[in-house]
Length: 125
Image 1 (cartoon, helix red, strand yellow):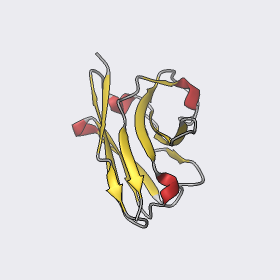
Image 2 (image 1 turned 45 degrees about the horizontal axis):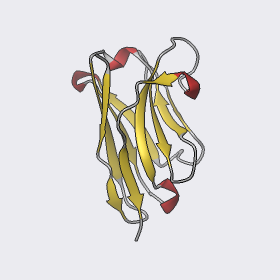
Image 3 (image 1 turned 90 degrees about the horizontal axis):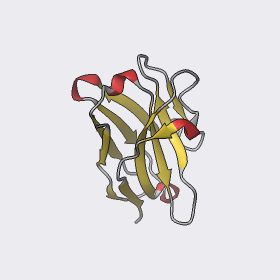
């Protein structure tokens, strides 16, 4: 059974760093596009970053470009999101998900499913 489990969230001061993990089970995550999403209080969930299966191609939304880095460890069947220079605007529950349709760029956010339970990231002094 396909499953994704996020971890690594927490409370960090502005300018700080956090690394999130998305551990996959029940499938080989390297064969699929994996995306990170976030949902802030009172806002809709938004796609933040993704990494394509079978390649090293990545995508970031403008607000995190240059600060966030997505990567994968195929041996551990895990995808990571390293977040630097965090700001209060990054506060949200972060989720990972798998793109269910092959083909096209990984930033086709509507094609993602099998969400994990999420991990809370709070940026505050």
